[in-house]
Amino acid sequence: MSRVFDCTKPDEREVALEEAAAAVRSGELVVLPTDTVYGVGADAFLPAAVEALLAAKGRDRSMPVPVLVSSPAMLDALVDKMPDTAAALTQVFWPGALTLVVRHTAHLVWDLGDSRGTVAVRMPADELAQDLISRTGPLAVSSANRTGHDAATTAMDARLQLGAAVAVYLDGGSSGGSVASTIIDVTGERPRVLRAGALDIDKLRDVVPDLEVES
Image (cartoon, rainbow, N blue to C red; front, side, top):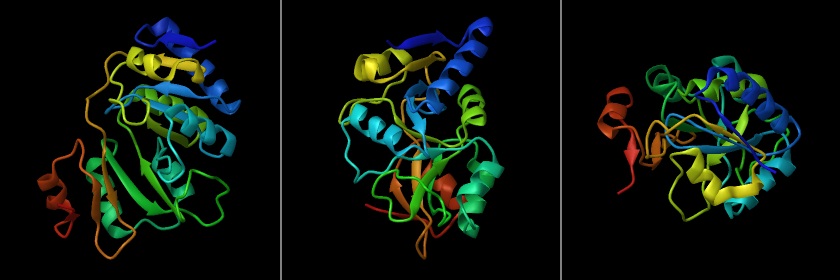
């Protein structure tokens, strides 16, 4: 049975984080708020847990699951060398609603889907999300909704879509926004927007003038 915690209550927050971290270590799924929309997360290094996440969403392996980190040190463990473009973007927009597709360290043993040596990584600005990730390590996180349905902006939205597939729901109130993060691929010669999202393109171009945006 799913456990739901009201993390807006200080006396419930610590217990909720402990329960969620334990669930992640056990290979179960958790729902957590972020600064964009609610996400459903799993241990990024447990392939069975990532597979369960994809199944809960009704999503196939052709769309690899992004990874959330809570610190620069955690990012450094995943990526050998950040491109200068990526480093410039993170200095301005992290933590925040920016997801970067980068090449991950070759020795990592994980299976996020058909990623071809890349990972979509983000550092969320939400304090509850950061606290959970600091306990679990990198989390594979996708929006907490069934594929093709509206993204969840509350824990209840997520529960109505994902139900008992999720072990722990962290209810942090309404999420920071209703628009998902902006995704930029920095693995090519020029940075390229793969998904327009919460960040203004002009502000991104202030940092990276050669940013490509697909029409």
